[in-house]
Image (cartoon, rainbow, N blue to C red):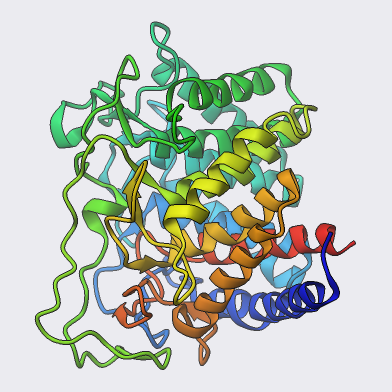
Length: 447
């Protein structure tokens, strides 16, 4: 039961989220992202929304995420639908024309601004986002060529990466689909992160085609995650595993957000403090923490919760994993949320306080629909309060109100560490999607 006071705060948050999406996130990217000279999208913007000088190389992650975003926003009616569809079609032409490997199948990792291949590696992280984006674009536009490309991508991933011995998918390959080396190339590892994004992509493909094979592979990857990648005692997700799903000490893997995330800018940088928070003092250390077996990402658990609920719905099994979703939320609420400032921390052990208390854009974005889904799955109003705490922190410290998009990273108290608003790994996939998903869940809860 939601009392009148809580209902009023949720209604206010819903209105704020809607305004943030329609007046901030959507116009920010619609006005800045289109590369009218070369095709595709610009992605690199500093903390004030200004283009960051550089060669303008285009990465599969940013291009796919922006294609997904414009397609999804067009379908959701949260902006100028005609302009959004035009932006999606423009990006799809470049993406399909320059990233797709017509000879070997799959998608390249990086091209230069004009579309010449710089890195042809076939990494399942990028493949999953290509499938997700092209499926969403096909749903939004009804383009039969996009649907055929989505189905061909699925066929390539199953043929090249499905692990027939242990289950799940191998994750890192070279341009010719030969498995990458071990170590930081991670050809001998599997991860919750990448299987979570395959769950996401297979869900959207199944929504597009309603195909029996696509649904079966979706159910399989869901079962792999729940059967092999969730710690039974804590209820939280792990991080990295060997091919047989034995937990491994997590390492920093090449071509990942952890390996390539921007370091904090020096105190006094021109775009520091754009959100009204204090920049960090010189000498403050925010180096990557040591990684150990038993580490979990609170946001991945919360993101998995709402993605799992969506997959269950698409498979015709609504509510099938409510108990698991509530356990994800309980763990994040106990160990990952900040009772003083709001928001969620980056990482921590299965049991005990967080080991990394900085706050990043994507964790706090995914926590919003994650906590709302936990409430929907279990009915405990503590998770509504947790959502409000995260949204409050985001509004105060992560959003630049002048341009309407999110900075990258702050301290626990909200001091700005990395002000950049866009980059190879950060566009509006997390901020825009989480805002849209939170609005939808609030509509259902308030109804």
